[in-house]
Amino acid sequence: MEAIINKVANSGLISIDMEEWLPKGPFKEIDLKSILWQGLILREQDLKDFLSAIDYAQFEGSYLNVLCSEEVILPQWIYALISAKFSPFCNKITWGNQTDLFNELLSDQIDTIDVSRYTDQRIVVKGCSNVEIAPRIYMKLIAKLQPVAKSLMYGEPCSTVPLYKKKTNTK
Image (cartoon, rainbow, N blue to C red; front, side, top):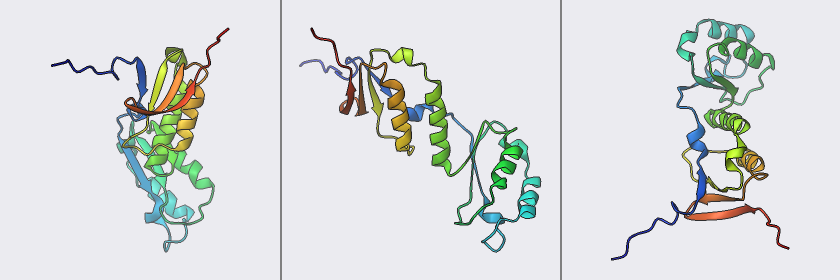
């Protein structure tokens, strides 16, 4: 009987699973829907009362997304006020749903990548994830890696879509 050889493990491919780049949390969410006046308007005093009643210690070291799940027009000042209240406690605060928060965290992570470790490497950017990753995040990662990578692929190491291959000088 022949030994089973894991060709993927021996291929020299570097697999990037962006989901692994996400912090462990805690993740928290605030929906402003609950403080809308008659479900239609966010009044300044209602927001200030809501914010003054919060125990901010529960947000210490968290990643917070704030949203309003009702389709209403919100005044621009609320984003600044909410940020001023939560920023001292949260590792990250963003407007939008949890997917928006995850994508912002991934974008931040891409900004900090030391691309030198990927120089002349064959890279597979993992496609399947439990987290919804926005197309702009994949585009940002590829743009960051392409100048140094030998090749870039998308998918799983056993089944990839080729994205880029560095041209070699042949004389």
